[in-house]
Image (tube, rainbow, N blue to C red):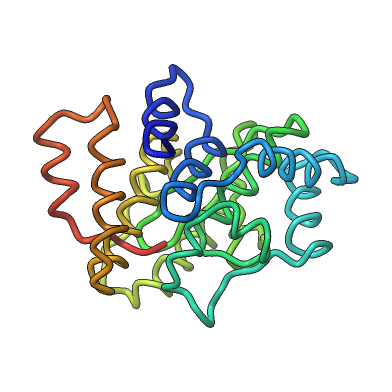
Length: 222
């Protein structure tokens, strides 16, 4: 049922990141009550004292202590939004989804930035302002984001300015699935790998050739 819920979420005109990511989490674990976790996001937003991008970052990462899970970075549960909400740890992409969705609930428009190797968040109204949810919501400008990229890639990947362009919701979801695919392949977890592959096959916007390319790609963890 959760795979079907995921397919329905991805077939929507406007993909809701919270719904799609919770559907992924439910498919990989025992099915959970989506409404409960959407309500948890509502509560996080309702407790945010300052409805600005900086205020959301401070609320989540300073006041509530959400943080990057450096000690168990490759734990697949870091890609499950419900577990991120519950444990307050995650990887850059799920912490970014958390920030985007809490911000949306308080009227602040944020978008994901799918920089290779490290996911960031960007403001819509001020596109030169970035936040690094994995590093406590640290605010960066474009030069700071570029320096971070050089650091995380050890200077092995040439920089491109388009790395800082907004990432569509569909692409965010695919990236989450790519991360999970790599983890389950490495662990030899065939059951969950099959579920991930099934969810990717249910994304209607992808052509067959694109699905094949994604299926053969190695994920870049973020």
